[in-house]
Length: 212
Image (tube, rainbow, N blue to C red; front, top):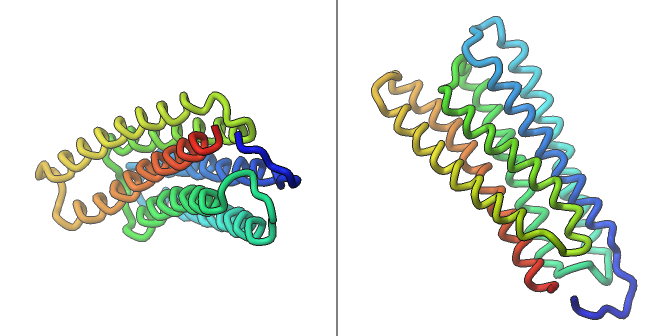
């Protein structure tokens, strides 16, 4: 690791950990939304409540992102490259945005029943969020991170497979055209969130390589 001759502001590690914990909560809210699938109009108020909780979580995640950026701008010596800090904060924020988008679309489109295979995508997101949040504190030492990005890559591959299966199911002729468009928007947002986790892992791998 490069030698530094000035005190390093290590609060970034805690801030990134806090930021990824919002992803864990977001993935849990996605799972809650999925649990309401097929329950009909009576579940509408619960869906709206979950969407509101997700928006609140997304706002908190935004606050964390802005706090990281402000800290970078006023810190003389950062624990690793400023550009990498910006990129990592932005990538984490993007994942939260995509998860919030998926929940919001379910409510806006008044989707009652989600395809069963959506559950596979949500499970990939839950696992990815847990693994990412568990790995983030290890940025401090830059040790034992390889298993993290390997696992995220494995999960992203599983997510891609689920996404393709979902598309095949949607275009199988079982759904009306308008319903296909609605559901495809939802599964596209979930896929974007899965890809976002891989981007986070790639940035962390680049940071680890630079700092080794």
